[in-house]
Image (cartoon, rainbow, N blue to C red; front, side, top):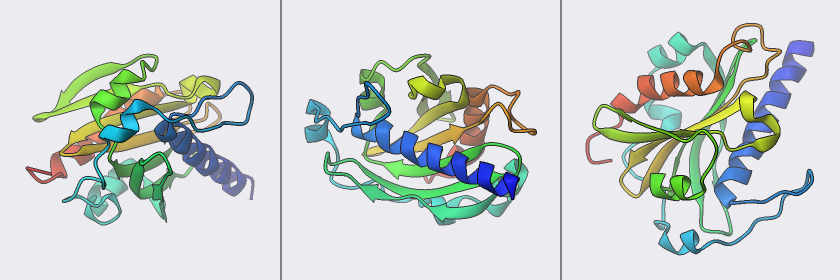
Length: 188
């Protein structure tokens, strides 16, 4: 029961983090209020087409990462940000949200998040960032470029996780992105 409760907290933290990040929320306390940005006008109308994280990530990749318990993770926010995908958890390890979003790498870069690191996966640009101040070491996001947005990997990795708590969350997110991104079809 304790492991299940811990997993539930990880999922809630991951969802909250993803929503706060994508809406451009600011927080002076524990409550967050969305702020409109000029970026919302340059958002594509929909998430990138051609790759569905819920069905197009191979079972062998999920198995290699120990990811299970797929949960839908999609939203259309009033700011125009759209997200479509799923979340998974690793028993005694990290939780991951993998979504297509109409948020581009340039938009993420423009937020000036801490520890922004650019790299490439195959021919696609990618960017990892620490976006949650309250849990900076326990969360990391990697956005991989797609036409009209990106494929976003949001990981939450509590230091109390027996399997992965001692590992760098951005290293885990990058490894997951490197395993999944090559399966994105050319042109997507």
